[in-house]
Amino acid sequence: MSAAPSVLVHRDQELLAHAAAARLVGAVADAQAAHGTASVVLTGGGVGTAVLAALAASPARDAIDWRRVDVWWGDERFLPAGDPERNETGARLALLDHVDVDPARVHAMAASDGPDGDDADKAAERYAAELAAAVRPGEPGPVPAFDVVLLGVGPDAHVASLFPGLPGTRDGRPVVAVRDAPKPPPTRISLTFPSIRSAAEVWLLAAGSGKAEAVRKALTETGPVGVPAAGARGRRRTLALLDAEAAAEL
Image (cartoon, rainbow, N blue to C red):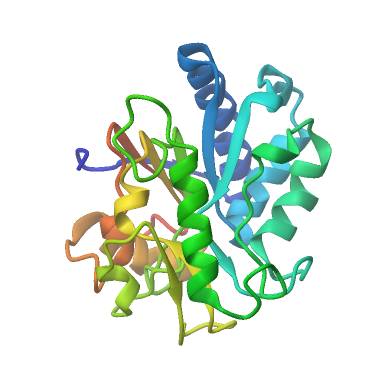
């Protein structure tokens, strides 16, 4: 596990989104310079989607060779394809429809009307197999060594769809089906902590006063079962990218 997270505080959510987008351009370009490709895990939610929209609007996005970016998701709502609540749908509208990504390198989690039907466990297994197939030579697996994982922090300190106390916080498999999530929809698919921690960098994103207590717990407490955000750490670096309201209790 990496050292304690570095905390970067921005005035408001808009500035946070633009700063995170600029930082992401640099991280992806550096990864491509180092090993030819980049592997990024996206998140949904208000801040995560705002970061993607800011990136799409930035001229600096052209510093990235989008054909050599692998796009993954940290979690997904198990809903039909194209549902506006799916993280994939939001990411496509905010960013992916506006850049020249290789469709074969955009790795969406299965929808509830996909090849596995409404079987979320099979959909999770399918995503785990896709991740395993993308492991590069020399990587330990069972998932790629992601360059950057973006994670929104929920008001209950959940990240991805790892909610406090649910079985997924204790699961050692790469990907799990999540049931009985405390916010709708109740059925989801999520990366687990071992997969998240394979990343070189993990970025925790939070904005608004409603996230302040969760951010404090994420940065000062241990025990990822009760405070999942406290267990989301990168191998090389962990960043907490916050606006002033989310950082108010630090």
